[in-house]
Length: 247
Ligand code: ZN
Image 1 (cartoon, rainbow, N blue to C red):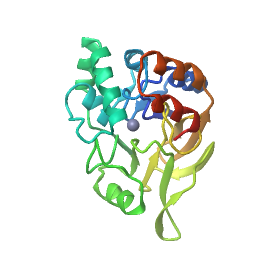
Image 2: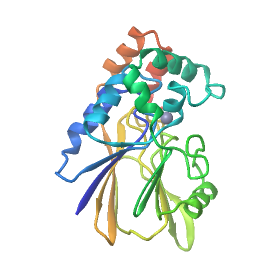
Image 3: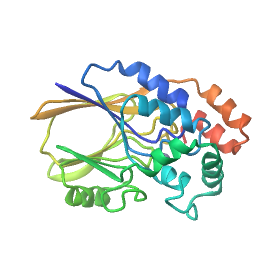
Image 4: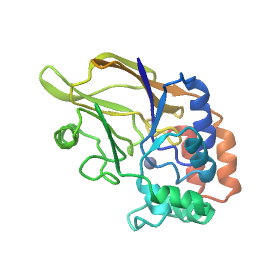
């Protein structure tokens, strides 16, 4: 049985990342994937990158990572996001900036295709609806498509002949999913959830050649200590307050 931990949108929230990793209890063969946006919004960009590097995690570029290292313009970012990206750019060590510059836009490992946004626009497209999810499975080179970027845990899967979203709020399991069944999953966000649940979210997958058990997990972390760090660095107050609401 192989074991994968899929995380996304850590957003410089080291406290949430550490809490998730404490809960994971990896076995020898556990592989870690992070679907982009390691940095942006939060107060500890270098420490988050260092932690993922120490795990040998497979880490994709997100739009905030690309902006923080100068690969993407911040022109389409909202003012809070832009301010945090500019702060992050100043904070990054030269080595971690290079690390972000070298992150890939996609990772393919059978039966998975990983993106931050989508196969069509790996850095920027939000998969929020059925139509985009269907396009994604048509375009992706592997059946199981995993994306981040929306900060909302979700699963699009065929049922009753139709491709549709499935509710995965809180802790949720999908057992015995065939590895050749096209679907789109989003693990939610480690560092800035936006589904109204402030707990850090991630996915753990148990894998055999024929099937997957997919577990969406949520875990409480010390939100207040992160808010305090955001305020100490004079990042926008909204970036602190939203963590308590999960919005
Ligand atoms: Zn994000």
